[in-house]
Figure (cartoon, rainbow, N blue to C red):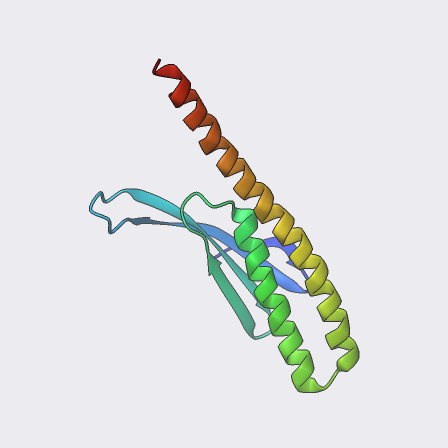
Length: 123
């Protein structure tokens, strides 16, 4: 998996798409976004379902990365670093929730708009 030049919270980022056939009887081809975060010997891999915004997959992976950083800092007894990481996690989670809620609102708006158009065209 190729690394990008992106680094978030000290985590290096690698991204790509994986394709597969569905097992739902249709054998549709779907592409799923995969992101891997690497920091030292630790790595986190996250995969998004077909159609999900890749930025959401990245943000969720970063949430797990920050939780892992907090765990490691707690194990080492570095309370100042733990406090700093909790602050970073709080700010990150705010951005992630805004991104996810906006994505959901756009999807619901599209469905609502399509439903409204279909409902008005039958009469």
